[in-house]
Every structure is written in C-alpha cells, then in structure tokens.
Length: 432
Ligand code: ATP
Image 1 (cartoon, rainbow, N blue to C red):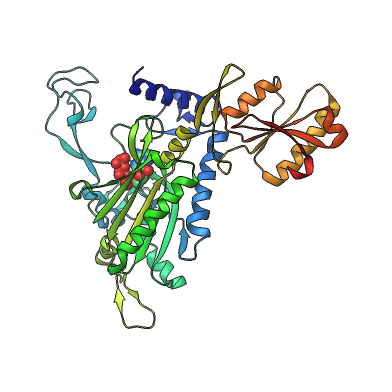
Image 2: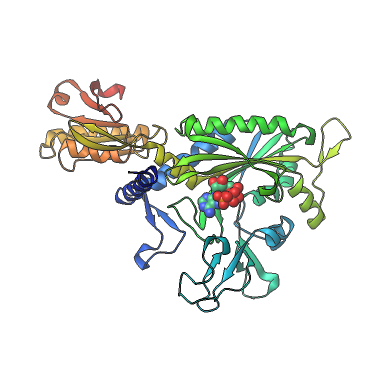
C-alpha cells in the first residue's frame, strides 16, 4: 500500500475511534450535519480542556510577565475595520450562476460546475470575506453590523490599554487569551483540521521595538517546549519560514510550525512578528493613545508585538495522530492511544475482577472513591471480562488500570497495569 493510502487509512481509523469512544462527533449529525463543525463528547471535551489548561498553566500562570483576558466574541465592527479584516480577510472565489455554489477558482475545472453540472456557469472570481456577519440588536442596518471574531488576537489588542492601566507591567510583557474563533472557510476538511468554528490560544507579547528579535527567539524556543510537553516528537514538527509574499498583511516575519499529520505536513501553529500594526491602527481609528510610558524616563513608545498563535483543534489532532499506536499482544492486534499522562482524559480505570462478587465490588468501590477524590479523572469499568476492559481503556489512552481481586481483600494491594508496556504490578492501595 502507498504512503498516501496508509495515511488516509490512519486518518479514518482515528476519526472512527474518536466517534466510537466518545471523543468527537460530527456537528448537528442528527439533522444531517453542518459542514465544518464538530461536537466534543465526554472524553473529547476533557482532552481538549486538558490541552487548554496545560497551555494556560505553562504560558500564563507559571510566568510573571503574562496576564490573561477573556474578551467578548462579538466586537464593535470598527475593530475589524481597523485590523484590516473587513478589507483583506477574503479569498477569491467563483460563483455558479445556476446553483450559487462557490469555489476557489484554482481548485476546480471552471468549465463545468461540480455541484449542479451546468457548463460555463462561472463568472470572474470575486473576493468573499471569510468573517461571519451578523447584526447586533433589533435593527438590521449597516450600523448594527458585527462579526463573529475570526481570531482572538483583536480581543487582546483592544484590552492592551486596560491591562497597562490596571497593572502597569514592565516591557516586555504579554497577554494571553483562549476562545472560539469563526471563519467561513470555503472548503472545511480533514476532520478537525480546517473547521468553521474552532478554538485558539493566542499570546500578544509586547516588546521594545528594537528588541523584537530577542523575544521572537524566546517564543520560538517556547513553542518547541510546548510541542514536547504535548508529546509530539521533534522529528514530526518543522519550522517553515514564511516568505514575504505569503505572510499576513501585518507581519514582518512569520514562522509556521508544521506537523506531519496523517493528511500530510500542514500548519500546526504560527509565530509572527506583528510590528506595531495593530496598536497603531487602534490609535488611529479609535483616536486614543496606545503609547506606553517607560518607567523612570520620559520615553513614550508604541510597543511592537510577537504573536504565538495556537489552534486547539490542530493541537488535538496532532496529539491524537502521534498517540495512535498499534501493536500485538498475545498474538492479537491492539490499538492504544499513547497519550501523555497529564493529557489523558481518564487517568485510572478501576475494576473488580468479578462483578458478581459483592465483596470485590465493595472493595473496588472503596479504591475508586479514594482515587476519584485524588485525581478526579477516574473511571469505573466493570463491563465484560478483564481483557475487554483493558482493550477499551487502551483505546481511550488510560495510562493505568487498577484491578481488585481476592488478594486485595487480604493484603490491601491491587494489580496496576501499565497501558504502554501492558506490564502488571502488585502495589499497596495507599501508594496509588
Ligand atoms: P491556514 O493557513 O491553515 O488557513 P492560517 O495561517 O490562516 O491557517 P492563522 O490565522 O495564523 O491561521 O491562525 C492561527 C492558528 O489557528 C493556526 O495555526 C491554526 O492552528 C488555527 N486555525 C486557523 N484556521 C483554522 C481553521 N479553519 N480550523 C482550525 N484551526 C484553525
């Protein structure tokens, strides 16, 4: 089988496992779906939160140069005029005059509409803005237009002055935010890789203009640290220096961090030097000073910005792809998710060896309660035989399975089985 087929097959296996085991479902599936949207099931939401909490801990809580914000998704339309999104956040598309389907002109044979089959139905390409437009309030006119934010970054820039006024931090300092972003992507595809509603984790790091390179290098290194923490191997992550003609309108330097997804090498996250583009625009359009007064001097300056921009879904898809593993145990194929322990949605599964022995069940319940209090993410699993339980837990990436048997009643020990090695050890309940 070719590499391509292998990759497609791996992607399909991951999508199917994600659905079967309660990680990720198609959005609005019951009504036939809604393209570019996905819903997170009980294990998916936990995995996603674990990723987001880890990010917040590493980049906000554990640092003394970082502040967090959570801005509204709906913002004054002037935000998107000043940022350039109203004018430039668009793609050139052709529209079929018969069925109104829209396509990227380069991606199709424009002599025939792929949707309705009509020939020569396409006109000249036109720019279609990718922002979802809506109206705020009961009046449907130009002044009430708003957009679902296409990036979280602007919610940081519009609060930069508030944070400076409340905390007066020394430069360099950063503001981090996590939250939903929306883009009316022309062709959402590849599972959660390109969706119309997704989640970002962004940092705007404010620096003295002449020192931007120093901070850029610091974040470059921190991005590599992040990739390691979420379990991506160094060989599977690649830096791509984005050439000037392909960079976003605001950027003087961008490195895309790409990952070897089963669908190919694609952008995982971006690191950009945004100059003073955003703060200077806000100052011009809002007519409010965005200058920072350097402590102990008369110097005033508009800080420049380094922006590491992470997509949660792409991180999740990279984590699932690197964790997905097949091996053989006792001559049988086994599938398991080799998730880093701190990301695994379930840390411990607890089972009585036999579910029809009340004394084993009672003891197992006791152990379950202790672990649940201690770790939270603990699952009770008494379905089927032990082998089946192990396989089920392997598939959702549970690092430890604890089994309570007759010896447990005598000596207060349990069997703990390691997901990756399948090794079983006897340990005392108090040291779990
Ligand atoms: P792409 O080139 O893949 O469209 P982009 O360069 O437009 O991405 P950015 O605007 O830099 O993306 O957004 C920052 C991050 O947000 C991306 O690196 C990615 O992780 C995530 N992201 C952007 N668009 C989407 C999307 N449609 N679905 C899921 N994640 C996305």
